[in-house]
Image (cartoon, rainbow, N blue to C red; front, side):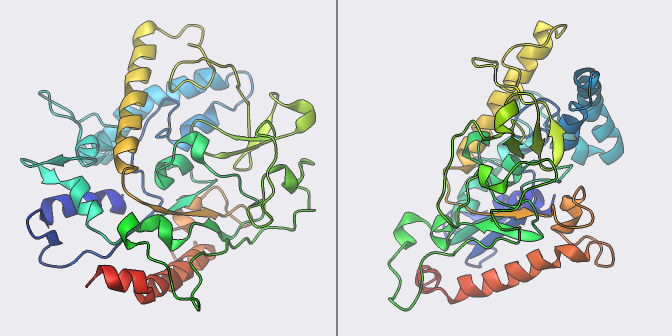
Length: 352
């Protein structure tokens, strides 16, 4: 939530004439597991992962997922008040767009939200690749599901992949570095060697390893609509997989409705519900497209190797140090990253 509050406040405080925020030059904007696209009960990049997990329950999964998705919006509004209403984009009234949609664009009468983000020298988002029951990987990393990388992170305990600083800089700021400084950051992996195999017999090499530059058929690894990693056994493709360490049913029917991973409207689903899901999905993709106009540095995190992989949302933020201490590696990574960015000559040049 902090990232969304920050984006809202920045839009209100930004001065388009001076390009300053409260008289200060904005430098680095960083978010951790932020639901930039809000929350959704339907299959889309903004779907709450917990809702999609209920759909993986054998036999009755689809019905349970539909029931939970339908209850999520009123429960969120009741439990979290106006914040819950805004998370699910239910606050649009009198022809005015919901708040989270408004903060993806500029409006002279409301706020210069997109310009405020653009004014920063760098933009970085840390995202959980699995185990986050509140915010999906695609949502927090500002990617389309098909843009999510394949990671070798079966035993991750922190950052498993990071883009170079160039990804966060505006094109005009991407000047060549001196020969003594590297312009690329090598991804760091805390997982097992590529030769290791997980408990289901799926080899880690079935997911492309960025370190060794290997890539394999997309039929062996794909991503779900909510943006969690999917690994598929080659002998049983389409029957079952592992999504962030949790069993899923892989659906590959082509030509489906936007936001519906089955490729067609489920039996018994009303036309009104299907149309509403399409409208929500289209709005989500429009919000994503606006935010993707800006350069972002994505840093992917995995906690599969920790004691509580299902609580990745708390681990990445170290919500309670005595309980979420295994997430301190991410905080330490950010501290080092911040120092690195501050010392980078391209950042210093942009601030002159």
